[in-house]
Amino acid sequence: MSLRVVFFGTSSSYSLVPLHKIAATHRVVAIVESGKRHCHASHLSAPEKLVETIYTFAGQPSLWGYARRYHLPYYYFCSGHETALAAFLKTLTPDVGCIASFNQLLPKSIFQIPRLGMINFHPSLLPKYRGPNVWFWLYHEMELESGATIHFIDEKEDHGDILKQDAFSIPLGMPPQELLRQTIKLGSQMLPAALTELENGTAQPVPQPQISYPQRGRYLRTGEQLFPWREWEIENAYHFLAGVYPWYQAFNGQYGLPGYLPWKAISYQKQPLPNAGKIRVDRHGVYFAHHQGKVRLQLSISKARFTFWCILAAMLIITWLLRLSTQFR
Image 1 (tube, rainbow, N blue to C red):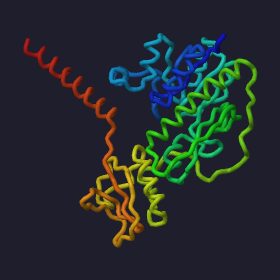
Image 2 (image 1 turned 90 degrees about the vertical axis):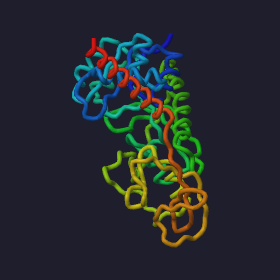
Image 3 (image 1 turned 135 degrees about the horizontal axis):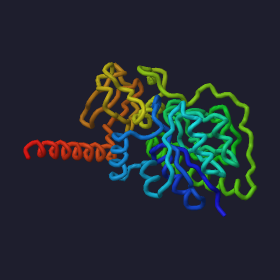
Image 4 (image 1 turned 45 degrees about the vertical axis):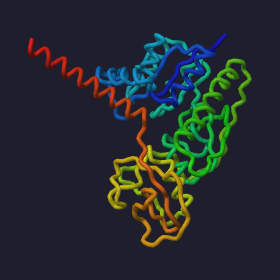
């Protein structure tokens, strides 16, 4: 006997990898995707479906594509549509809800619908770094250990009792893709195990420690300056620049590099440098001049993103050519 699971997430590997693991041992009965911030419709628009189709074709994560492939009910949730979502869930009679990445807090009227409640996969060692943007702050705060937590959800953010938690070390300069991979792997192992314990009645939830951490895993503010290199050791500057480039561009016009390009740190060399705080070039390439040495930089362009934009451009060109050809018939 397996649990009837409603899965809540986003179109990302953080959601799709644990979803596949859950589906191997339990019955996923529906998908609820977290809509973009400030969205209004409770369904994908035609252009959004086109983008999701391209993502699926390119092998990129898509919850809408997963629901179509396995013929599952799909709900695109936007804030303000809680009553409609509750009605949708009640028709499914779920045993439990599983969350892996959801950018909106769910009210009690939603998370109490499943018979066993709802559980969440959070990418930190709770109660540290509650919030939606854990990855950036792990690097900013020079954390050399992180992990994953499976916990019940309640009315507060990332606050419910812990079902599973495990940790791993973060080596200096760990690439963000590797941090993400290890976190997803850990969470994807613990989520099905937590579900099995809930099903068997052997789960032993533990309240989160009543410890207040000053840094929340919050979103960044526009124009916020978060690279205090003058106060940091070169190791901290290197670790930060090696990890945060997918979410934060530390270099803007004031350092001599355009801020829209994803520069990442690949190594560092300790040697006192005059005129620190500038981007320089030597025979080995580009580096950031820290007062304790050189932090080597390299452009980072995702192959997946490059492939997506190539496919999208090709489809737009084909559409344009087809329309053009009909004008000459």
